[in-house]
Image: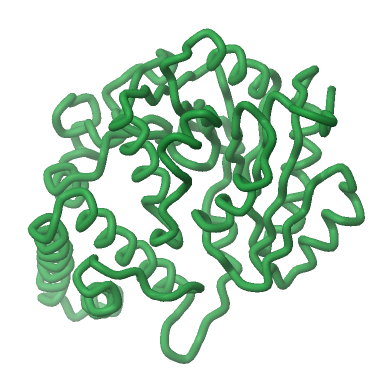
Length: 333
């Protein structure tokens, strides 16, 4: 294992932290064990965690380059701060709740060295129990959203048409060129990043990696999924630490962020019509579900109606906050 090579490490591993101290510790310990002989540096960007994450890193991992932010920058902006100081030829994005399996880092470097046209790639994400997580995906679109919302994608996962969003029809053990891979783990060629620019900081959370992959492909570079790179991923751990407020619950706050980001994404890549159509589709789906459950007087059905009505209200707020996907609200969201 080679940590923090003095001049030019092969890889810069960037971990954005937000209130996941114990998982962050496990992430860094696993990184150290799984790095083999790869020369790398580790950079942790702490997004104003309240649980002592930054102090833990400073005390227990002095070899990590630590950036302490006084505010929650979100995923895109926090990574961009690390990009500015990263020295590696490759940038590795690693969630604090993601843990490298043996050889993952070495295989990532080897694959990128052997495939110079690849600008960004990801591996096979699995849960603690080894269960597969969507790891290679198609771009969000109105049609793909319709398939997902209608339940057709879940009902017919082997259909190349209906199951195309998460490529559920594909063999998860076969490498493939794809539209995008999740940001829980990815490797990016630094020279490509310097060419196309960093993350679009208008995305606070969600859709930022989709946008980056689109820009990489637009620059005539490829995005790949390599299943022999295995990363254990929990998912949603930072979201669990969100504080409730009098105006909106933590779960609704995360949903508001997702809706805002979705509107920004569709407006950027599909224009006004795309953002408007996306909003109408979401609103139709929530209203139809509320209507479907309103015929029953059971407490469970009433709770569902209330949740769908809250989602409609959240969607309206996201539309107002982003002015129809044209403006990103000030950070932190």
